[in-house]
Image (tube, rainbow, N blue to C red):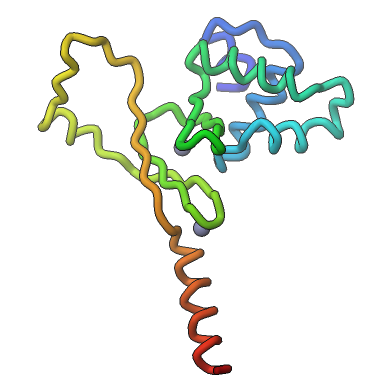
Length: 147
Ligand SMILES: [Zn+2]
Ligand SMILES: [Zn+2]
């Protein structure tokens, strides 16, 4: 499916901005935030404003084409992958990683939702990512050698 079809499938009228932002999210599965998307697109779209990026993302989220992640208030980012998966936020580098999530778990251990209707679920994990852990080990070893 191309970007136009994806937008149409979610009842979103394809505008230049919407197409550009959707294309960006599909090409960059790194969970970018508003600033990153704006910085990447504004050189080729001089009329684009941060407010437009924000409002466009809101439309995409409202129609279910994109998911908004707010792991903490400083990290609102956007994800094109709407299939169930977990997110890991590194407290050091701030990167958000996708992790496989087995929806079977919920079938085996259903949540009691007290009659509320669940429309989306988020699985957030936080800690130190593999890369930062390795960097930490490396700098610790260096310190030991030099002291
Ligand atoms: Zn990290
Ligand atoms: Zn994700």
